Image (cartoon, rainbow, N blue to C red; front, side):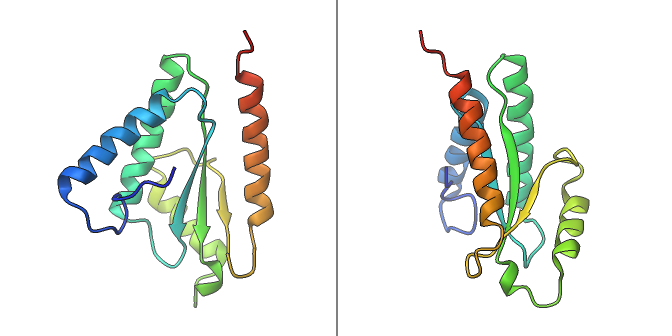
Length: 142
């Protein structure tokens, strides 16, 4: 799900609040949801909106456990690795870990990607494939 209005889009505050409410409910209750990829521009530290999404996903994971709904996986995708000038992948990941440690588990996978070079594409496909298998095995056939 691409969530318009939560990032850089210029939208009225009411629309942003509506999308946040929708996203919170969707993440917490959508039983067929098995994975969430959160894309972050690797040239910049996480924004307040990124932190808000981390918190929403963390809350949804807890609520799904309490409601006995299939768990979701959470993967952070650092984009535009080819466009970073000075920071290495390791520095970008380290900075991200420091920034998110209060929000999500330290074991959350982080994939560094580039659409230009296709770096990281195979890793994303592995997570998608794993999520598809898990999702299909949890769907009832009654």
